[in-house]
Length: 297
Ligand SMILES: *[C@@H]1O[C@H](CO)[C@@H](O)[C@H](O)[C@H]1NC(C)=O
Ligand SMILES: *[C@@H]1O[C@H](CO)[C@@H](O)[C@H](O)[C@H]1NC(C)=O
Ligand SMILES: *[C@@H]1O[C@H](CO)[C@@H](O)[C@H](O)[C@H]1NC(C)=O
Ligand SMILES: *[C@@H]1O[C@H](CO)[C@@H](O)[C@H](O)[C@H]1NC(C)=O
Image (cartoon, rainbow, N blue to C red; front, side, top):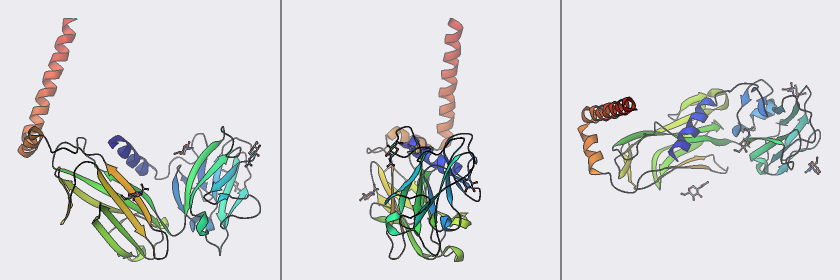
């Protein structure tokens, strides 16, 4: 579980425009050149001005398709929830989705889309890539940073990062555990910096909100707020825009349900002055043993 979360976090960091185009395989690219990794969040406002291409290099299009939450997006005529598709030109199989202004994506079209190339999505051998095309705002990611290697040593400090993407005019964001808000901001207007988020990409209003957590084995606290908890910690990030569906993302940090062992606690209290020499001693002994047993062969 830890490893999964850490990997997810590393992925979200390295997502900052990967190779474009990648050396092989299906990929997503805005017609202005930026590539997007699998499972990216893309605001409908972006594809109003710039079609989102799904491309499979050196392949011949044979009935490929884009399918959204409201069904297939018709290509070269017609639309679904105002989303349209065009068959692209060039040496690759290429299908673009876009929305013609003054329209925006219709509510039934908000959600996950998959692009299948070069054949349609019912072909088990087709290539598939996903994008979440959304109205207003979405949660681009909710992840833990600086997660300690060993959750049985206390106290621990780590960070929760919730990244909002899209809608910049007025939104509320809350990061909490159980029913306790660790951070809560309302009426955030990105252009006026009314809330303390970190700008990741101003062009798509990608703003990261961070909460620093201290955990002593029994209580999670952030600033003056605290919440007692044992076992797995269930966090939630909520982004709300007036009159729009609320976006919620959950995250669980695995933690032992039992109280810290007295040994671990004592070592931690004594601080690094005891822990590190102890680790060094153990390592030295292990190494000596290894060398010794090697010499015996
Ligand atoms: C996909 O098709 C569009 C429209 O014909 C074209 O402008 C674009 O260059 C094509 N993309 C690639 C990667 O071939
Ligand atoms: C997908 O393609 C297969 C074979 O190319 C075809 O038989 C099938 O009807 C297609 N399905 C859809 C939904 O277009
Ligand atoms: C995209 O992710 C989905 C599921 O997470 C996976 O099945 C698919 O193979 C991935 N596609 C690419 C191109 O990475
Ligand atoms: C997130 O957690 C809440 C409450 O803990 C639960 O009601 C909801 O179903 C969860 N959502 C997802 C997507 O897991």
